[in-house]
Length: 288
Image (cartoon, rainbow, N blue to C red):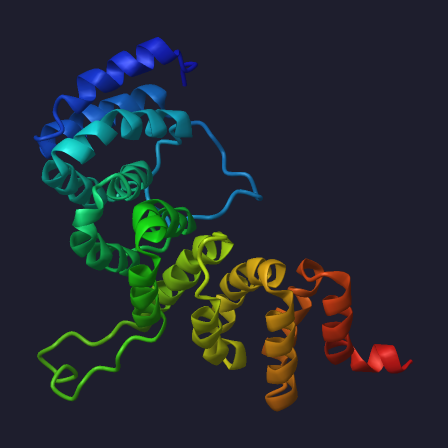
């Protein structure tokens, strides 16, 4: 893998993006660039997040960012062409291609929200890569999260709690809901909540609490880390409310699941609130 020489990289990307309106040509040229910059000898460290097996060229992230940066003016000026390009990139089942696709969606104008908001969950249902899940939640939805957070919140609710299929939809000649895909959608919803609750200007926290309560009482084990990722910034922003919610839920419906969540939230509460919650989480220890 050659060292990144920025002037050379900019020239290579300039040559590449002139084919933005011809996705097939763009993909061929992009594969050549990835072959140039990729590290095919790289070994995956035990600490590296595992992927589900998408091919990857191990291209340095600055290369991907440079491509997206130089495509950003096109996303603003010819958004439909970039949307088509993003779809083509996603349909090419390689990690870096899909990473670029998630980043490009976030560069489209807000007027393209009606295209982006259905596309993100559709892609998520096809995805089992943690890296791409983060990209969909943080990059693809970034502009919508900043400009129209309440619109995003409506969709997050539908991703967390999808409507059950009607009898007509469950007929044999119609596709049935895929439990793994729906679980991916819940992961997306929780991950997309994190930047919302971290934003000081976002004030609709009561609705977030309402969304989380059913999952606090019962959720698949695989969702626990995603729930904690939401609870921790909430504990820092609204420690009194989070302490009250966790204490109340533990009093009404005590469970190992809820205890697990509370224990991993404790260190993100101010001392006085942490002490209040700790009395419920570790009652036997305190009695001794």
